[in-house]
View 1 (tube, one colour):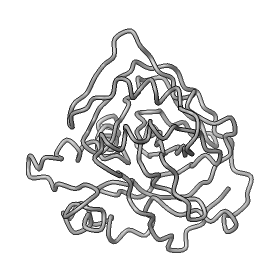
View 2: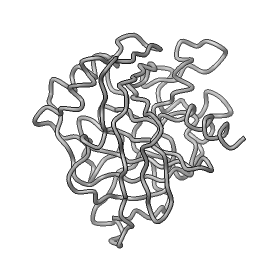
View 3: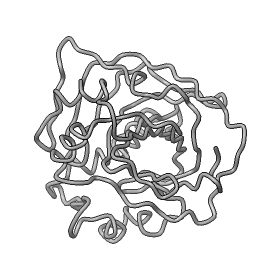
Length: 255
């Protein structure tokens, strides 16, 4: 039963909306949410009862991080233990997602979370002092009880990113399609910055159903991505795929 719960949570997740994305064409009676028009983020909370948190939740993500106002504390170190995984990518209609093989994890304050997948948003979803970045990656984890933790990586425009270049070479072009690249692996550890200092807060999924109780850890040091790499992803997504920043409602941010 526990494994089924975790599977359901991850399927609903993505912060890229994997389960709902499979219904992006409106199949099965599921609401057709997206990033523009009638399905845009400002309408998510009204589209279905199960999306109510998108409108009524008070611990929503993404957020705008005020560095000066973030509480300066001794945050626990994130112990990364990532391995290479086969290149298995999904275009779920809302993002490009790389599904991760079992065995990779992070440990924070004695709690272990298994890496399930990572995916991308342009522009970034989280902002720092009002600044949005060209790209953001979300690394999605779950512990044994199904509690979720997301590690975010921001990208500034600059040199091309080698991991992204590898992925973009193979990313599936059609919504609701996937690809497994034979004899090729990727290790997302190579996409992380040297410094693992981070901002931390309690938030939510950034796509419907906007479930709260997600542990967020946004790495402070950005990586770089080329303008061409951002353009290729944006064109595939037919524009931006980022939810606007949400109100804090008194939440404490730490760094």
